[in-house]
Every structure is written in C-alpha cells, then in structure tokens.
Length: 164
Image 1: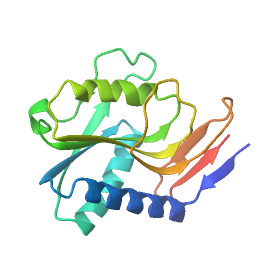
Image 2: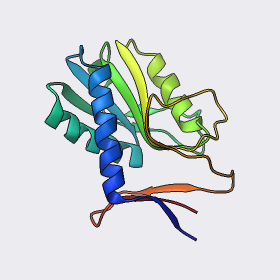
Image 3: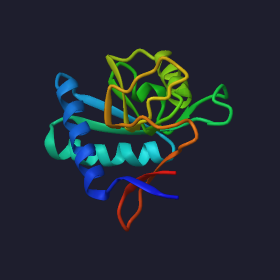
Image 4: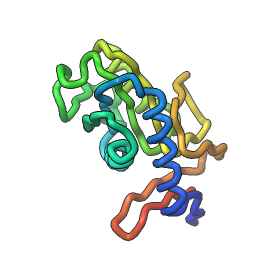
C-alpha cells in the first residue's frame, strides 16, 4: 500500500527551503560542493544546485558519490577528484536518512579531506538512526515504524515521496 507523504509541490518547497539554508550557512564561501549520494541523492543535489544558482552568487560544483549500500565499507568513489573539493564547503546530500549507515560512511569518506565547512542534507529524515548522524538540512522529519519504508521518486511526470 502506498501512502503519499510529499507531493511534487511540497518537494519543490522543501528543496527551495534547503537551498536557502545552505546559502545562509555558506554565504562566506566562494564555491560550495553538493555531493549527492548516487542515485537519488545526486538528483536531489542537482535540484538544490539549480535553486542555489538562481538565488545566490555561490559557485556550485556537483559531485556524485558512489557508495555500495550493501557493503558500505567498500571504497567510496566520487565523480570529481578530491582536489576539486579540497578546502571548499561541502554538503553531502541524500534523499532519505534511514538508519544513517550510508550517510555515516559518506561523512567518513569526506572527513579524510580538508574541507572549510561540512554539512549534510536530506529530503526525508526517518528518525530511526543506527548511527549518531544527523542531517543539518532536512525537508521532512518523519517518525515511522521499522517495517515502513520511505521511497522518493524523481520523475518527469512529477516528484513525490511515499511510505509503504
């Protein structure tokens, strides 16, 4: 059974709000790297980037982060080289914060690089964390049962999120 928790319009509003929060946090930076966890986290990062480019003078660099969600200890790779995000402000972006496993391994990867500022952003925070990781910017906090699953769909026909 599908229970819609965010409509296309609500997602647009949440992404815009997250973009403004990122701008306020990184106002002193010249460049901000939006590192989106493949695949939906990267789509979300792209959507945030479009709004940031519209509302701010920040230069936005997009980076896709590849994490094996079944084996998060495996080496993490990124679509841009480490030199391209060194000493810059970086936001690690994912669509849903479930247990925190993916985000915590992503954070660990970027902690090995000197950054001027480091934050995390998610569209939906499920409040069921296994690790002490939090999202600095979040669209929606949702208390769910462990059996429930949040799915975000980015589609040409309209974005939405649902609980099943």
